[in-house]
Length: 67
Image (cartoon, rainbow, N blue to C red):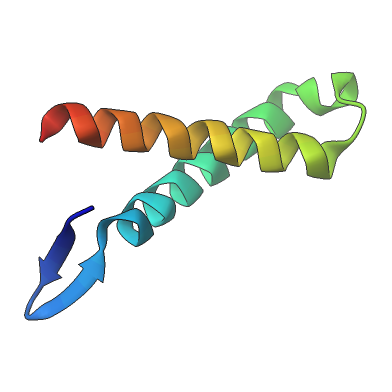
């Protein structure tokens, strides 16, 4: 994995991708809550964890295709 240079500070790429996935996850959770889709979910915390992992996988895949 490569490091990302932020003004002289090297940050692991996975950390940057995890932060982007977390922000995407926040948006998706608000959208799911606003649409009332959480009533279809059996275990909300487990669903949120899986949603984050799917977002992280998507961000990593998208970033890998760009480089």
